[in-house]
Length: 239
Ligand code: URA
Image (cartoon, rainbow, N blue to C red; front, side, top):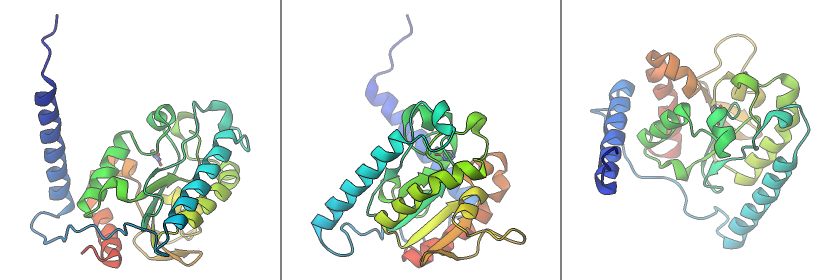
C-alpha cells in the first residue's frame, strides 16, 4: 500500500511549488528587480456605493448565467458537458476575456482552470492582483470541438451574452486574451499590429494581448505580454 503523505506536508509542498512557479514567471517576465507596488487597486464595493446595486448586479448576472445554461443558439450546445459562464469578482475593475472553454473548463464549469488558466492566474498575481479580484470570461460559453477557435456564427450567437456580462460588471478595463477575443470585441484590425495598443469597447479601454495558451507554446513572448500588462497596471494604478 502506498505511504500516505500527511496533509500538512502535502499542502506545504504545494505552496512551495506555487512559489517556485511564481518566481519562475517573474524571472521570465523580467519582473524580478522591479519595484512593483503590490497593493490591490480593486474597489471593495460598487463605484455607485450602494450594496443594493452590488446585489442586483449579482442577481442580474445569475439570471444571465441561467439563460446561458439553457442556451441552444448554436451547435456548440450539443457537445458541451456544461456551459462555462465566468469566475471572479462581479464588481471587478479588470475583466479578462478569453476564447472559449477547453476540456478542463467544460468538465469543471469554470473558465481558465487548465494549464493556460494556471499561467493566467500567475500573470494576474504578478500584476499585483488576486485572481478572485478580477472577472474572467470567454467569447463563447460552450467548448468548441477539439478546442478549435469558435466559428464566426458561434461567436456571433454568444456575443450578446458577453456584451451583457461586460455591461453588468462595468469594468474600467478589459484585457482581450488572444486574437479571437480582440476580434470579437472589435479591437483587432484585419491587418497590422493588433496587440499592445489601447482600443475601446463601448467606451471601455481594451488592451489586446496574446492568449496564455499561446505563451505555453511560445514562452519567448511572455515578455511581450508583460509589456502589455504593464500598461494595464499603470492605468489601474498598480505600477
Ligand atoms: N482558453 C480560453 O480561451 N478560455 C478558457 O476558459 C480556457 C482556455
